[in-house]
Length: 213
Image (cartoon, rainbow, N blue to C red; front, side, top):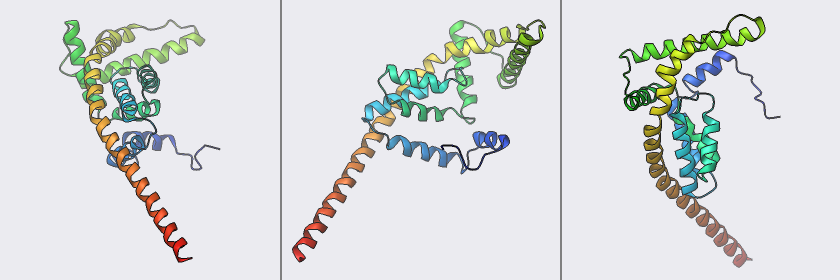
């Protein structure tokens, strides 16, 4: 019932994730429009936005929706707003988010990050993914599991990223809250004013037609 009529090929799904249909500006406008039309107070929606923004700074890829929803529930924010706000995490922003989080994490842990962070990070992700696939296969095949690349990934990327994401994540979520709340409140007031104007216009038209009769 809720499935798409036109089933998209896998390559198209991946391509639209990297570059959405209509461009990133149109996707941003769509998310902003949906946020403004959500029910609830501006503060509740703003807390949801803050939860979603914080979630994308964490290295728990594939679980950002769950983290955002959980944080929104704890903060008594709008859960749908938190899910929409995870749009902040996209192929255009993940690299700077990763670098900021890793730099902060290594600084807090007293370690150093290599200068070739982009190539090194991709290599660590690739190595960790290889170990994961191999270990899944080892469950059924009986071959020894490999943990070397996963340990390197955890020590040099995942753990520093997880620790380093806390400060920039909190700062970004606070900034997102104080930016979104007045914008959403202004939109809601404008929307209410338009509704009242429409009601008054209908009443005037009804009164005019009644007087003619």
